[in-house]
Length: 77
Image (cartoon, rainbow, N blue to C red):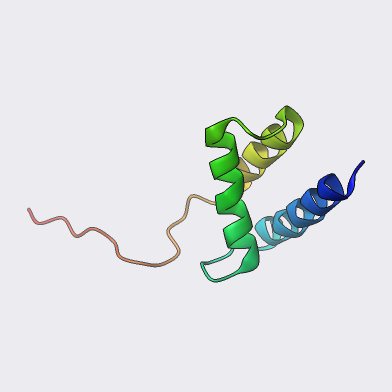
């Protein structure tokens, strides 16, 4: 395994540990939030190895769907 693959795996494991603990990715202004955004960009462009893509998409599915902040839409009925 090369240096890039080792770095990718280290960041993946760090993000995975956070998702297991909290159920969410990091909020903005965190290095792993930017890393996750870049991984999505690589997937969309088709530039990510299949093994990494499968691992990252599985990690995304581990996240909680519970709303954790920000604005909520108000129904005006």
